[in-house]
Length: 448
Image (tube, rainbow, N blue to C red; front, top):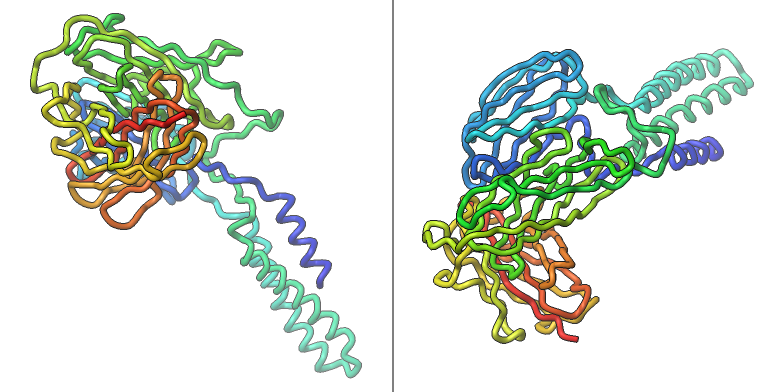
């Protein structure tokens, strides 16, 4: 019996594979953040348990979302289903098969094509051992009792009963270890490459704008083209990374302008988002993404805005200006609304945000510091899978860090961050409430 249990444990350790943190599993909802038609929203494709069957699609706005036209296409046979989804009014689309699909989302003259897979869990292969072991054990127990009743020596009954007990033990052990056992691939899953364990090459990028020379105060498109450096082909195998295909952070060199958006996939290997900048100058871009089987990446780029500074007061908000604290030993205050010159962002409500406190008051390079942000506007809602986000950029633009708040009780957010080197850092804390997404800008001085 001991040898049998040890053998089962050895098989579990040998066959178990590490979980992929960002892969969407069968039975789990697919959540994808999008910045479309001037709104920040999350599209939710609900898990489906049977195919053919219904596929439910919902949209969550921060604070609201426009009505979206949907077009679901099966990549395998080209079958198309259309629908409309709005906040509080989910769409019900019918799928006929598992496997690769494309969901086209349209609103305000913009469209995104989201590739995903319809997955249906077909059960674990370990269930056969569980139920098979219990069934065999039941038969052998009955056989053991009958053998014992007609055999005085009882040796045969003992053997049969021992084997039955072993079957029960194996079944019970598998039930206990089920969370750590390797699961079978669901129906519709992408075949995994078996020839190499090195993963896929890192993504190369080209960052451009349309038009090529955007003017201050006018809308333009920021475009990121992704390609494989070894083949030159477009990279179209991004995996969902913190509820988005890609996160795009755009800042001005002086830190007065800040955007954290989620560009639309408009073609294979192409991401686009509409922006507006009120001031001329050089703008830095940072793209966070993850290629399937290759881990996360941070891609950088830049573009230049020309023209004169916009004087339109409608393009001002309190959400994107950074100011240095007068005394690093005190709480860091948010920007003064009267001095703000950043362009409007419909995802960020007006109103002063809470105070920021950094502990220790004078942070040391390479040592963990705690950043606390007092929230306002209600209880923070999950956004991108987290209660809050802290984005930190070096004043020279050479460094960008992004960490998450993991759920501090009350009306405060708490982040842990290690500033890598002495210098000045621009920082933005973000959280979502029923009023929308609030961005709290501040700066931190790390002494030498």
